[in-house]
Structure formats: structure tokens, C-alpha cells
Image (cartoon, rainbow, N blue to C red):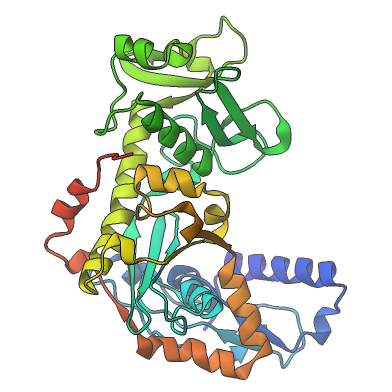
Length: 369
């Protein structure tokens, strides 16, 4: 077993950085915990990840033995051990198991929905007795991929959008407080939710005709224009005379990309709810996990149908729960055993096996905000 060189180098770089930040000598690190998705875990261990992407999406193994950190290329204490979180399935990896451990998904008696939004969206549902997990193919829209003006969450990315205020019709929150350069995932969700709220996007996800926009929101109708044959909504222009192609805008195609992503996710949690005989209103708490979940507006997520239609107070940004779960495993042997026990307690649901998935996906495309 030999780790992929680039994966090992990245792990070592992160180890050096965290030791430096904590003012700890790496030679004094005696134990390491790794919580990653199934693909990254395979790369770190030098296992060919290709079978994970081919039906029937079978992993080499769900549980992994404790190995020496040095075998993973980590320059810590020579006898330091590396505990690796197990995976529930090819698309629900150790990072989600760590997140479930940190959030107590198997211990809390409330009905809770855990959603880690990303290219591959992991979803966990618990009714207090039974825990189900699945993964939905959301695509790259939430990372700014396949979006005309999309970019990662870096300086210049629009991350918050508020529309329709009489005194400030377009209010943008930009990372780094610099000139907007593009649109990241949270900004994408925000602007679509706002356009749905104002009636500038209809339930099918299509921009309304110009005359309808002028009647509904005259202060914003001028921002609906075209680039070639495609309709777009201009969010930021570098100067008043700029051509629409030089602006930061949302295109009709971008809306479709977000629709496909949110439909895949909502189909996933809808099917899990049905499997447990639950309705949307039965969910007492929604946990938005991961870095993207920390910045996602609960109100916007509800409006576009990304999560069940619930009061926003029931929707919580859980943050980096995978990292919290890894810390728990380092501090407690009991918690580490609890992570392994989740393999027996959680039922993994493979959406690709569902003959009705495509029909249910189409049902979830509409915006009902």
C-alpha cells in the first residue's frame, strides 16, 4: 500500500500547517484521524478508486485497519497511528460518518435531516430509531462549476444577494469587499431565490417576459437582457455602458444547472422521508453541513426547494462537522468505536437502484417559492 504522491504531499502540508498553528512539534503527534470521502480515502491509501465510479459502485472495503501515519507519508512521530473513518458506501464516505458522529444522528430522538451540499450531496435522515443515508448527484453548480460567471468562494465572489429594496434594488455581499468578479454557490442560490420571490423567474425556472418584469419590479426589469439568444439577469456592471457580456450575470442556463442540482437533492431526501413514512412537516431539524452549508441562506434554501419547506429556525448551519467528528475520535476510544458502530446502525440507500428516481427527479424541478 503506497499513497498517491499528490495526496500524501497535501496531507503532509496540512499537517505541517496545523502543527505550526498550534505550536506543536510534529514529532509529538502520536495519533492522527482521517475523515474523507471514499475516493480521497482510496487515493491516500494507494487504492485504485476507479470501481467507485462504475456500477454497481462497490468499495474495496468499508472498514480500514489502523495504520502507521508514516505509511501515509506523514512526518510525525514514527510510531504514530492513523485511524481512518469507515465509509457507508461509495458515495457516503468517512467524512459523513464523522459528521454523523459529531451531530449525534444515531442518538438524538428527534426527526432530523442532515444534508452536506456539494457536487455529490450526502443526505442522512433519522426518525430517532432508524437512520438512512444516501447520496444525490448534484453536479458542480454549488462550487460555481458550469455557471457562466461562476467561481469558487474567493475574493471577488458574490456570496450574498438581496433584491427589490426600493432604496437599493440590488445589494451584493462580496468576499473580500472588492469589485465583484463572479458568482459562488451561496450567491447563486440567493439570486435565484430572490428572483423567484419577486416573480422574475416563474415556477418552471424561466425568466418572465420583459413586459411582465416591468410590471412586477420596474426597478429591476432593465437588468433582464440578452447575450446572444440567451436571456440573462445582470448583477454587476463595471460601468454603465458595459456590454452585458462584460458584466457579472445570471444566465437562463445557470438557472437550469441549479434546478438540476436542487432536484437531485430534494428527490434524495423525499425518497428517504417516504421510506420512513414521514412528511416534510415531521422533520424537526435540518442540518446543513460542510463549508458550503455554513454560508447557505436557510430562507433561500427553503424557497428554491433545496430543503423541506420548514420554518427557518429549524434549519441549522452545522459547519465542519467532519472535522469535529475526527477530533472526537482522537479524544475518545469510545467515540471511535461509535463511528464503526454506525456501519451497522445506518442503512445505505442507493438511489441508482430506484426505478422511479428519474420520474421523481422531474417532479422536483419546479420552483414553488
